[in-house]
Length: 423
Ligand code: SF4
Image (cartoon, rainbow, N blue to C red; front, side, top):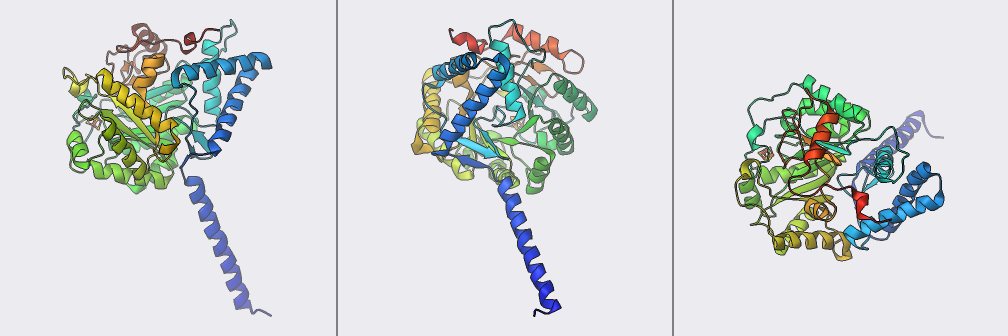
C-alpha cells in the first residue's frame, strides 16, 4: 500500500506532467511554420473549395460558381502562369500565402473574397455592404530614431507627434466604420509610440481586424514582442536592406540596426508573430547574386516572407536617380518567380515583389484596394505617391477614397482586376 506521502508525490508528478504537456501545447499553437512539399496540394484544394463556397453562396448556382472559379484561375494564370503556390505559412491554425491577405480559413478572407466578387461580377445584384478598401497602411507617428537613406517619410519626420492618441482612435473608428479588415501600422517608427501602438492594435483586433506592423525592428525586445502578440498582432514587416551587415547599417545610418533586425526576428518568432523582411531594392543592390544571398540570409534568420519594394523618388530620395532599369526589374521578377515556384528553393521565404503585380495587373493602391494615411492623418495613394487628397480627421473617407481613385496611381495604371479576363 502506498503511503499518504507517496500518494501525494504521485499526484504532484502527474500534475507536473500535465503542466508540461499544457506548456508544450501552448508553444505548439504559438509556432509559425513555413509549409512546403505535398501538404501544399491539400491546402491549395482547400483554398479553391473555400472560394467556390463563397461564390456559390452569392450566385446560388453551382455551374455559375464553377465558371467564376475558372475565371479567377485564368486571371491567376495570366499573372503567374500555371505555376502553383508551393509555400504557405501556418499561423494560429490558418494558412497564409501573402502578407497582404488574411489566412485560410477566416472570416476576413471570406469577406474579402465576397467583396472582390461583388465588385467585379457583371450583375446588377450588388451587396449593400461593399467594403471600399482591403487595407490601410497607416503612419501613426512622426518620430523615428533612424535616418535612412531612402526615407519616404522624410518631410514628416519630427521630434513631436502631430496627432494625439484620441485623434488616432478617432481615425481607427472611421477605418472600422468603412469595414476595412487589414491595417499595417507604420511611421516614422511605430515602436517609439509603443503604448499607443498596443492600444490601437488591441482596439482593432477586438473587431477581428488583421494587424501588421512595419518597423525597422529597432528596440523590438522579447517583452515588446510578447506584448504585441498579446494585443493581437498577426505579423511584422522588418526592414532589411542588404545581406551584408555593414551595408545595411550604412543604408539605415545606424551601427546597431542590423543586430536589431536579427534580434527582432527572433523575438517575434518566439512570440508567435509571422515575420516578413522588407527590402528597398536600389540600383546598386539589384543583381541575381545579391538577391540570392539576401534570400538565403532571410531564410537563415527565420523570416517567413520577403517583400521587395522598388526605390522611388520620394522623401529623401526625391530628385535622385534611383529608379530601377528594365533589366533590374526583370532580375527581381525572375528571382521572385524562381523562389516561389522552384522546389529547389523551398527553404527560402515566400517572396512578394509589388512591382511585378503592379506591372501585370495595375496598381492596387490609390483607393483601388488600399491607401496610405500619413502621420498627419492625410490620405495618399500609397507611401510613395504623395499628393494628399484629404484628411482622415477633417474630411470624409468616402470623399478621400474617391479623390484618390480619380487621381489614380502616379506610376502604374489602376484597373479593375476582372477587366483583364474576357468572359
Ligand atoms: S525609412 Fe522608416 S525607419 Fe528609416 S528614417 Fe524613415 S521612418 Fe525611420
